[in-house]
Amino acid sequence: MKNQLLLVLALIPGPTGVLFAQTNQPLSLQDAISLAEINNPAQRQIENNRWWASWAVRNSYGSFLPSVNASGTLSYSGLGAQRFLTSEFSQPSATIGSSYGLNLSWTLSGTTLMQPATERARAHATEASINSARINLKSQVTQQYLNILQALEEVQLADAQLTRNDESLRLAQARHNVGQVTLLDVRQAEVLRGQAQVGALQERHDVTVEKLRLFQMMGIPAPEDLQQVVLSDTFAVTQPTWELDDLLESAQMDNADLNSLRSQEDATRWGARSSRSRWFPTIQVNARWSGFTQSFTNGDFLVDQARASSLANIAACEQDNTIVNVVNQSGAGLATADCTAFAILPADEQLILDGNDAFPFRFTTQPFSASVTVSIPIFTNFSRSLAISQSSMALDDAREAVRARELQVRTDVSQAFYNLRTSFETIAIQDRNRSAAADQLRLATQRYRLGSGTFIELLDAQVAAQQAASDYINATYSFHRSVAVLESAVGRELR
Image (cartoon, rainbow, N blue to C red; front, side, top):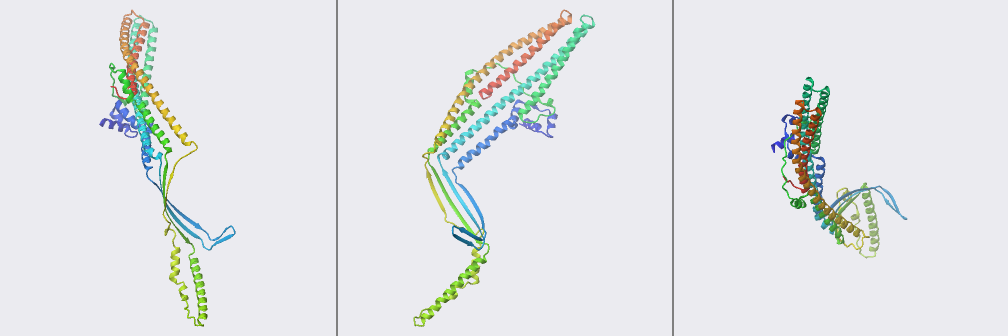
């Protein structure tokens, strides 16, 4: 764990990148895979789907809760006359007003009931997709790791070839100095040595390129000095002992892509059930609380109206009292009214002004209202049938996709198994060829040194030895790649 932490810190871009060059921290395959799972951009994009799926599940349960909306309004109406048909309404003062509303709405339908299970299935499918991408990324990093190891062995092979060409050049020069060969052998040996130098340079360049690709897969910048990146893992060639039937059975349960498609099929199945739930009735409950205020901008207008009304009432009262007094002259004995009761006092005027001062928060509460609605879909212009048909078709497609992937998995596992077995047998053959070619080269070198062989024979032996060694390296890493491919096809580690 400590080495992994140091590796992560060493590979962070910035001043800590110097730490990697100084400590020469080895890079294991597991470290490379762990860094790729954390930093690979494509993998991170797929990982981000987890949060969306998680919130989709929460939202599906939130559908069972009522939705609450609050609203507020401010209004203004200027003074003037408004005409409606032949009537005219005059407003002697501008008005301002405010209102609030609190609405509660709750809906229950078949889709709402099915939504949690559907979203959970989709979240499970998302997790399966993430796991599938992680398995594929692990396989890619493993194969790239093997590419670097193979390139490093090719560098060693190129260096060995350069050493042989140096020896051949010295032999050719020595034989030319004693007059046993012409200058043509020397020049040809010099050309071959130059070609070997170019080959060694190209092989080292290939190592640098393969390391750059590995760091790209890991999702982190490569250090400036890639020679400091040392791969610590090695892979041994062992005879495969797995049985094909066991691998096929295991792949049907563990293959990540196949499990991802099965999860998608399950999510599609719940989607089809949700579509069929459109036959269910829908229950909707609504409730509302509200209030309003309205005030005249010119409060004196209301006081003037009250005063005018008071004077009119007093005048009418006095007129009634006059009539009563006339009637009382005939001995009727009627009582007169107290006209001062209609007078507007300063306190009354203040009450009028206070009553007008309602804006913006002295609301007049409106009566509470609520409703319950039950709707039963009878005919929806075939939209319901279309949705059910589409979801059923999607479910059939998902089933066929799973079946096709099952067949593909069987083919991939079988092909990888046979490739692995062929690669293992090829290694033994290439090892014998490499030994035979090395013996041929040793004999040709001795013959040329003793003067009984030609430089062409030596050259042919060198080419054969170089090719046999390269074929052995290719066979070895073809075996390791076959194991990686087989592990990816099965869905778990095999060694």
